[in-house]
Amino acid sequence: MKFLLIGKNGQLGHELNIELGKKYKVSAFSSKELNIEDKGKISQFVKRIKPDVVINASAFHVVRDCEEFPDKAFIINSIAIKNLAQICQDNGSRLIHYSTDYVFDGRKGEPYLEDDAANPLQLYGISKLAGEYCAKTYCSKSLIIRTAYLYGGLSGSRSKGGNFVLTILKQAKENDELEVASDQIVSPTYAKDLAIASLRLILKKPNSGIYHLVNEGYCSLAEFSMEIIRASNKNTKVIPIRRSEGDLRRPMFSALKNTSAAKLGVTLPSWKDALKRYLFTLS
Ligand SMILES: NC(=O)c1ccc[n+]([C@@H]2O[C@H](COP(=O)([O-])OP(=O)(O)OC[C@H]3O[C@@H](n4cnc5c(N)ncnc54)[C@H](OP(=O)(O)O)[C@@H]3O)[C@@H](O)[C@H]2O)c1
Image (cartoon, rainbow, N blue to C red; front, side):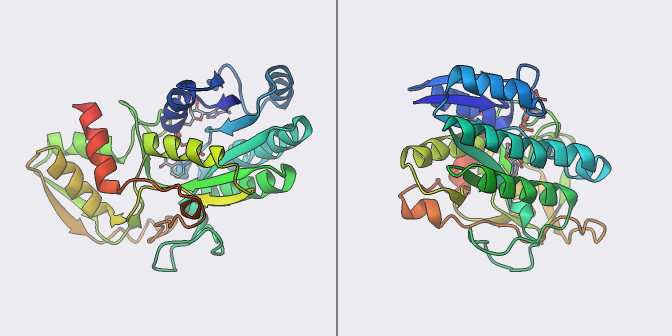
């Protein structure tokens, strides 16, 4: 099986490149080598490489930047996906596209299933939901994988300046106490586990559609922080607080439940187990 990977230097892209490369031929590209906005070049590369599977691990996904630059959010997260999906369709490639827990409004109060109604609260989620629509409408063999609160690599996401785990570790070095929201609930997910599960899912040749792939379980950001500090043997105290009212554009409860991939036998380890393994790679 041949793969073409877009966004090879991201948290997820990096892990996908490693996992796929163990057994398969992967043509992997950074944003400089293959800009997802460049429809002509993508088409040229897909025609030349003839991949069985095209994986898009790129995104414009800093929430506040999407509010400030909505045109860029829609170009990268939606319009580029329409073009990519059409190119995959025309060349007989399967498209794997990643989406987010932020397509939900968080009002359900329990983990979201794959077919729950989306209702994004901010431009990032709206542009990603439009991207989901484009992937599924324009490529009949597309898989949309929603994930959440990703962390991975030694420096995390370049555009985000790291990830939640690295931020807490840095803050714990500089402070005796940290105030963290106890009322924002998420499914923290290790990019390595997501890459492994994505490949397992692809190999099952599942029906096209939406799949939720996250580490098992969920927690508040305060619980997540406490576990980061406990597992890395730091003494900083986490003080649970209520999230600031000003941050209403982020869903309060965006945990995801994997039911569709689980039916095919594809599940991820628990979030605590994943965190322990990630922290080990940093030590
Ligand atoms: N991070 C999270 O917490 C989170 C949560 C839910 C869902 N997701 C989704 O998971 C996926 C992977 O996220 P991640 O955390 O691995 O992202 P990341 O580390 O920020 O990496 C994003 C990648 O996209 C590339 N990219 C940006 N603009 C591009 C363009 N125009 N053309 C080609 N490549 C471009 C970047 O390349 P350069 O750095 O070279 O510019 C970077 O390698 C995304 O679809 C994201 O929406 C992430």
